[in-house]
Amino acid sequence: MEIKVMKRVLDRNQDKAEQIRALLKENHVRMYNLISSPGAGKTTLLEQTCRHLGPDYGVGIIEGDVYTDRDARRLQSYGFPIVLINTEGGCHLDSNSISGALQEFNLQNLRLLFVENVGNLVCPSHFDLGETSKIAVVSTSEGDDKPIKYPMLFRDARAVVLNKMDLLEYTDFDYNHFISDLRQVNPTVPLFETSSTKGQGLEGWFHWLEQEMKEQMNK
Amino acid sequence: MEIKVMKRVLDRNQDKAEQIRALLKENHVRMYNLISSPGAGKTTLLEQTCRHLGPDYGVGIIEGDVYTDRDARRLQSYGFPIVLINTEGGCHLDSNSISGALQEFNLQNLRLLFVENVGNLVCPSHFDLGETSKIAVVSTSEGDDKPIKYPMLFRDARAVVLNKMDLLEYTDFDYNHFISDLRQVNPTVPLFETSSTKGQGLEGWFHWLEQEMKEQMNK
Image (cartoon, rainbow over all chains, first blue to last red; front, side, top):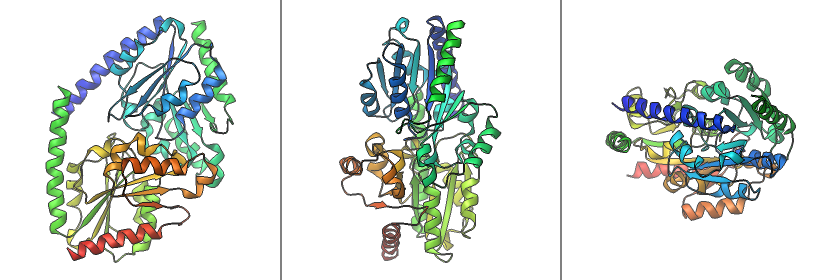
């Protein structure tokens, strides 16, 4: 009984996601869905990225949060349009809420839309939001076993950011173990090793993002 | 439509949880449901706790994991009975799976049952497992904003473990901010500040657990 309903929920989510994908394509907007554990550093990565891209780049942000507006407020100072979605206890964003949020943007002014999903490694992976790509963010202090324990996200991700590299030496994170597990799940995904709070190692991530945007322009 | 079904799922979960609670009470077993983000240190805390309590204490473990048996294997060496529940993509344990797992234990030999829930700060808070108490585990490297961002868990927790205190000085975790947010959500919950990997600050946690068990015996 519940399985049938879940299938219907997912089917309906998928239909709406396809509509979003078409709408974004029509407007030449790329949408990146950032997924991580709570506290892995999505917001700080976004702050650094917004600062790097600058106010004229055409960035928008959809901020997913269970109850608060804390992350949205942190991002507000960069002058980009932000829409906050509070899930009120829900553990992931869905395409219906994204569809509503998109109506708050002037898509013609946007090139790049970041979605910061609810901090959760499981459910957000099941729900297509119509994004161009999923980005997995993981931090060294969470341990090296995340790619194997949450394979769905790492398999689907178009890029992986390994954040909090500045904490690596203080943890028992086994770098080779992490790489070997990640490559088992996803042999080719680009990996960026960063410290967002320290502003270190971000060049590769910025470069990748800009390459992605160039591809978009050439399409 | 989905809301009605969700209510039915939660009602059914609650019924089963009450049966579990009665069964555990009858057998004088206390069950602690450990909830945290992925990688906050639940497994390491359990390893330290198992080591401290020793093989004759009557400890059992139910290990919740999305796909793998990695955490269960880590805990196996302590000689306690362990039952692994793989949720196969599910983001939390429910009372039905716990009920099945309980059949694998000889409850008369147990005094204390730890449940390590799936790493997730949202959904596990919604599902009563019939536990005696929920324990929230949070780590300094996740940032100081978790109690306010995930209030349901911190409101319901009977104890909070703030782990990875050894990383505090390398992060921008604002201790006063954390305490103030936690006390806003839950003014009285005991807080234990630990480093499970370094084996530091665990005395308070052990002591609290032993006091809890004594209360059980006096009931």
